[in-house]
Image (cartoon, rainbow, N blue to C red):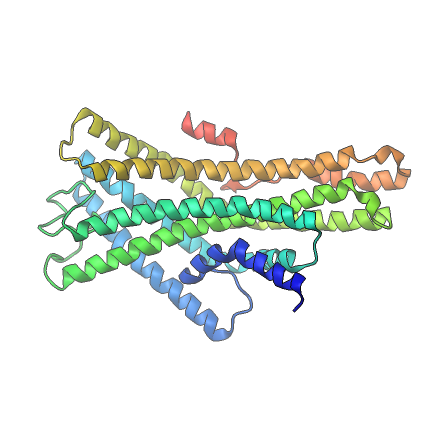
Amino acid sequence: MDDSKTLAYTDLDWAIGINRISLKILGLWPDDKLSHWQKFFANLRAFIIFITMFITSVIPGMLALLRVWGDIVAMADNLQIALPLSVTVLKFIIMRFRKEDLVPIINMIVNDWIKTKTVQERDTMIKQAKIAKAIVMFGCVMMSFASVALIIPPCFGYSIRYLTNLTDGAKPLLLQTYYLRDMTESPYYEIAFVAQATSIIMAAISYTGIDNFLGLLVFHICAQLDILKVRLLNLNDFKSFSIGLSFNIEDHLRLIRSVDVIDHTFNLMLLALLMYFAILFCVQGFLLVTIIDGVNEDISFMRISWLISILINTFVHMCLYCVVGEILIAKGEGVYYAAYNYTWYSLKPNEARNLLLIMIRSEKPLLITAGRIFPMTLSMFCSVRHP
């Protein structure tokens, strides 16, 4: 393998490495090159992780919510953890059943990185990949802090939760959950403790990994749109205008189809996240107000830090979804203006008419949506913050 190919594969591993590892752990990485047994074990791993989260956290959390119904503080404390876990399980299910649809997108990303590129094209792809990796690192740091705060302090007898006699006995678990038998006895308590800790870690990887995977896909599309814009502005570099325009139109259609697949995969997930964020903002706001007003006097510094970190994490994630959607729209418009700013007036009439094809199609914005209803833009984010 020559040096250029080695560099290309190194760039590929750098760009998608963390995303690929996290989704492979969950059995959700789209890959059509797996053998029959590799696919079987990936699906088995995904099933076991789903069952662990659903059986040990989601269902017992719902039962606990029914048990504490009427205690507003206990209900809010339940929802601030039960909601993210429930949404994570929903995201996990959607990603599992739409995994095969994303295989062509992954193959496209791999081919874009390993094919021959100019230095400018490589720099453009690396620039967008750096943004995606920065989001990955932020998500990993925030979710690591949340997981550590939920798991480590209870090991030493401290808890960041609001404890209640309705669901928490002498030995409280990591989450506010209710089981059909007494879990304070050994070894049931230890089994439940380890199962909940595993569920929290898998949920953190799922929540962050799937969100960051969306960022990886969108920012790669943005890089390709930037490269397409530059090629449109330099159509004269092609030996034939018609051949160059045809190549760019095909590339533009490829990117449009990719955005359609991404939107088809993630739109229900984003709609659920919109509703989840709205509810969680209210819950977190209520809990912080109770702390400020001194309604709940048994408040530790760790619990306050936990509430603030979750509020920041939720706010930033919601903002990032909308920023990513806004950037995608801007990059799509860049293609339109590149075609418009080309010296079309110096072309032959039939060549100028052909240039209209890409201008007309690029005039329609490239969007990722929530449920195919709300476009993920900054204006929509402001509407969520100020209903």
